[in-house]
Each structure stands twice: as structure tokens, then as C-alpha cells.
Length: 502
Image 1 (cartoon, rainbow, N blue to C red):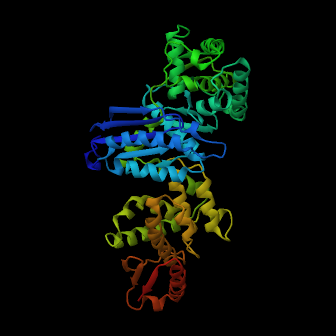
Image 2: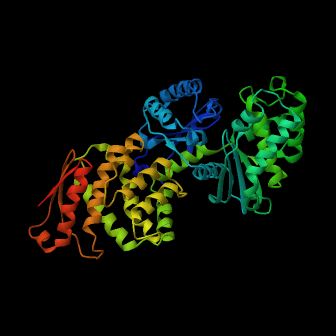
Image 3: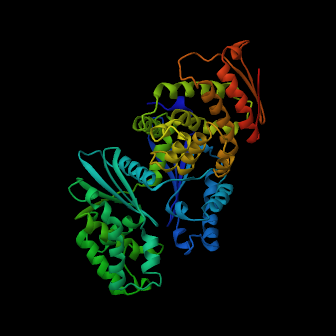
């Protein structure tokens, strides 16, 4: 299929802000739809290692990360936002100063950064791995050991069926059990036990018998595969026996400074013990005997997902449709609201700054999901809906995108909650409030929940002043709508907007 009609930039890129390493991958998108990798950059930042006991990323680690991003920025400077995705994972999910870090990082990169949830990370990992493998019959288990989290996915072909994210990784395990560089049998056993306890609740769903082949990805697993291959312990992927030999070799060395293993890079040495302890636990609990290794992982998944969005094969559309079905959303009403919102958006096009354009799809999805909370309770259903959208596992959505959906749904009726918009990522704050006004007006116009056509309404906006012009006599014939508009004047006035109509 030719991609010319989508006006896709020739070059696309993805940046993975992992807890151990930062990765950047740049590719050329061919007309056939295939990606040709033209550049890769990797920096061993160890962001997770800089987390203190209070959950704060320390200054020295932040500075190391920013230096890396300065280098990345030179390569992506000329790329539009539509050709790039930047995703932060576990450390940026849990760090208390994550917002501060992201704000400065975005200033360096001049592009927005998404923070994705663990299961979304797992989906992207599987997408990257699946694209790099020949299609086989049967199910596959994919394992990714990152710096601060470990993702487990079972899928078939290109589709993940089950995804989990566990809070253990090579950096966190190394920091806890091998922080002084010493590697003892006792410390290794304790590290394996903790990883096993973290994994145990998921064991029944991911153990052998639930899949036909096991595939590992990520730097930790690739490093272990390189060691066991060059040591001659396993010439095809990673075997259970080869892991035991590596375990013995690390314990015999007694300290990371004494590790002289072929295939072990200097940048991986400090976290190899922690990474091995997690993989040992995975092999044991899930009863894995042999694991193949994939060169592709989340960053490639980000690229393939990006191309899907641009070519209108966006997984988020399917996610919203599934949510509407699960929560029994009134489809007809959702369509009415969405249609009117799109009319109002089109009518205001060019009257508000262009920064509104990038959240147009999110406005559509919020319109479709604005009544998702009705299945919980009719009272304050907008609050229930916001809670669902904040906490649900929504494939394809970043945490910031879910936060915007939640803010729009929370403020689509009654009080306009400005404080919730202030907590959003910077590009969403002003634009989010502006499009929320359109959603509120559309909901107000369709309060009767009938198929009666809404007349053509002229809408003009000037900064925070919104004026609606209805056909002559229409409001006199629709007294309920008139009453709601009068109330809306006060609601919007409290939010700093001035609504007028005639």
C-alpha cells in the first residue's frame, strides 16, 4: 500500500527513556510501508539508579540524562511532532519529581514526552518483537527485563493477548542486593527470591503450557545471551543450564570488578547480577527451559505504533470502541455529541491557536466516552467516568492522554474544574480547556437525547470570549436549552470564559 496520501514525513523516530538506558531509533518509511533503520543511539543513563529513598531522581543522574538528551536533540531537531514519539517508562512513572524532569527534558528536545503505563509498555514491546519475527503458528511468551520493571506478554501473531508489568528490573534489583558490587550466594538467593515473589501471582497465566515458544528482549537478556554464547554454554538463545553456569561464574567472581566474561560489556557490568537474578526467577517460576532472543523491543514498537496512527490504523480507536461496549455507553447519544462537537470544532478552526489541533482526536474520544460513568451511578456520573478513564488499562494511550480524557469528562457538565487542567502536561492545559468548552456546549444542546436536528449555529471565539448565534426564534421554541445556556454563562464565567448568545 502506498503511504503518499498520508503525507508522512520521510523520517520517523522513537526515543525510549528507560530506567537503565535511553535509546533513540531513527528510520526511513518506505512507500511499501516498511521501516528502514538509518540510525541508533544508546546511552547508559541508569535513571532508576538515581532514585533516592524518597522517590526523587537525584541531580547528578538528572544532569547525566539531560546531557544524553542534548545529543539526541541534535538528531531530531527538524522532525515534526507527528514524526516522533518519546516515551518514559517505570522510573518516570514512579519518581515524585517526574513532572519537573519531563518539563526540562521537553525543553531540551523541543518535543512532548509521554509517560506510559506498564501494560502499555508491554503492548509496545510485543509489537516491536512481533514485527521482527517470522509469523509462526501458536502462542509466544515475550519477556522484557528493563531497569525498573519487567514485562510479560503472551500473544499470537501480531496481537498481544495478555500483558503484565512487574516492579522489578536489573537496576532496581542490583541497587537493592548488589549495591556495593559484592556478589555472594546469599545475596543472589535473596534477589532471586524477591523476584520470584513478585512474579508468583502471575505464574499461573504465564507458565509453560500457556505458550509455544519463549522470546526475550531488552538489554539485559541480550547481554546474558551474548555471554552464554561466547562462553560456549549455549549456542542457541538462552538455556536454563547456561543460566546456572553464569550464576556460578558471578558468585565465584565475588565482586563486579572481578568479572572477566566474554560478551559482558563494561556498561552492563554494574547491573548484570540484578538482571540475572530476575531472569533466573522467571525461568524457574514459569518453567522455561529454552528462550530465544529478539533484537527488537519497545522502541521499534513505538515506531510501528506511530506509523499506525498516521495511516489511520490507530489502536486507540479500537480501545475506545471496546470501552464503550464494556461500559454500555449509549451509542446514539455518543454519536450525537461527537457529531456536534466536530461541527463546533470545525466552525472555530482558525479562531483559536493551532495548538488545539494536536488534541482533536482526544476531543473526539472524550465525546464518545463522556457518559462512561453512567453504569456506575447516575449521580455524579462525570466523576465516576473521570475515575475510570484515569485508572483504566487503555491500550495505545499514554498516562497524560488518559489524564486529559478524564479532565474533559469530569468538566463536561456542571462545574468547570480548572484545577484538573492545570495538572496536565503543558501542551494540554490551554488547549484542553478550550475544547472542553465545545464539549460542554454540545452536551447542553443534546440534553433531550433525541434525534431532532440541531440547527446551524454560528460560533465565534476571541481568546476567552465565546459567542453563539442561533437561527431567529429557535431559542424561543426551546426554552429548556435557553435555561441551560443561562446557567452555562455562570459556569464558564467562574472558569474565566465569557459566553454570550443570541
